[in-house]
Amino acid sequence: MEKIERDSLEVDVLFVGAGPASLAGALRLRQIINEHNETAGEHGRKKLEEITIAVIEKGREIGSHIISGAVMDLRPLEELLPNFRELGAPLDSEVTEEDVSYLTRHFKIKSPIIPPPLNNHGKYVVSLNKLIRWLGPIVEESDVMLLPEFPGAELLYDGDRVIGVRTGDRGIGRDGERKENYAPGADIFARVTVIGEGSRGSLTKKLVEKLNLDHDRNPQVYAAGVKEIWELPSGRVKPGFIMHTLGYPLPNDTFGGGFVYGMKNDLLDVGLIVGLDYQDPFTDPHRLFQEFKQHPAIAKMLEGGKMLHYGAKTIPEGGLFSQPKYYGDGFLIIGDSASFLNSQKLKGIHMAMKSGMLAAETIYEALVADQFDEQQLSRFEAMIEDSYIHKELYQVRNFHQAFRNGRRWGLIEAGLQYATGGFGLFGDLKTEAGHEKMKKLHVFNRLPRTSGDVPQLEPVKYDNKLTFDKVTDVYRSGTEHNEDQPSHLKVLDFNICIKRCTFEYGNPCQYFCPAAVYEAEEVNGGRRPKINFSNCVHCKTCDIMDPYQIIDWVTPEGGGGPNYINL
Ligand code: SF4
Image (cartoon, rainbow, N blue to C red; front, top):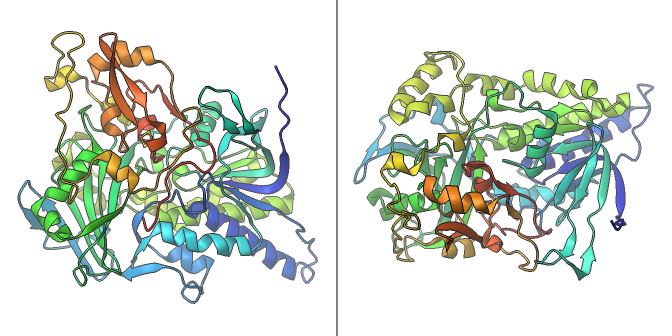
């Protein structure tokens, strides 16, 4: 086999994925190194000289893949950049009015009180996308190399020690052949590799499998969030108004709820979270979101408005007991990749940033000791356990599991958990991986009558005013991929799709993907997905929810994917 000549680069610390965890981590590390060097002489310590820090990012720009319509806890930002207001941090509006409601098909029943976990007074509505686009240049100015369009394709190892990342090749055609512009990915070697790729990261998934980092942990469970940004007639939106809903359109056995956040400039952030541990294989988060918008209470808010942007992402919901071991020889895992997210409060940005900053403290100690093995990097776990991250995660350690028997019992159990510091009725609870909870078609009385005559969801007509089909929505996500490249959605065995999945589950990929990537085509009496990979918004739902676990999401050519704005 021809040996491929690759460029290589050596850095001291490499962060993978330019989200809130990595950017906060890289900036904090630079700050600590600078503080160390300023006072090293006084304390008789050696300076840490010429420490190189790099952040690689698969998106075409820093921020283009970032989406979270969020109500943010500002603690880590205050710690990282105490003068963030003077620096023009794009916080949208302080939360001033809150609404928690239960939706039936036609009615909205407002809770007379705001349940304490959902009390967001003092927090800020933000667009994480805007925040990251603002933070990126600050991090870069602090002498951190930011490398957009550099997707991490695989981790580099020396035995079980992580020694860096190989970035993706460019210029491979759809047929797998090299094109004229072929350029092999570079090998970036680092003393510490910090993985902050977000939810269901493709490198994290392989690392966890290889080193068995989830041994004895609950399987991770996820939710999919689908959202749109709307511009409404002038004066309609109250900036700082937030609403969380339960109930319609989600059935009792499906975890999740809706949200509406008022922002400045007449913008409204509206979305639906759907637990990716549902039972009905025809569950379609995008379609449910369209139904959510048709509820009279939501439709009235959106009347006369214009949908501007769309996006989708997954959220790690499993909490404390689903966290993989997040350190080892040569690596740390931070942010959503390590499940640093409070699922009860639906908040992960502050934990992502704080985990990145604690990773920075850990790496600083490792640089001083000139030691990067598992024992040295285990300091990260001790620091997490000493921080508010652990305290918060511990209090909600059983939250998602409380809903294992549906919403009604879930609400009662979650209330008891709140009153008992997270213990609830039964103490520490197990989870099941979401795809294992999906039930076969016959359970839903949708048994195919003859082979080739398989049930399908009735198509819906969308009005393009309030409701939109997936393709129209994807257009509003700015998603683009070079079409002449191999698909980055690897279906490992199409025979399973045709011979089993069609009849057992009805090819659920055509429903759970919020971007119309999978289109079921009749083949040999069954169906197989035609893969429109250029629509992919990188949410990872397919990698998580495929019932046979035969979809492997890998990074496409650098720069491909959504171009999120304001999301
Ligand atoms: Fe999400 Fe997979 Fe669809 Fe891409 S193909 S948008 S990762 S579900």
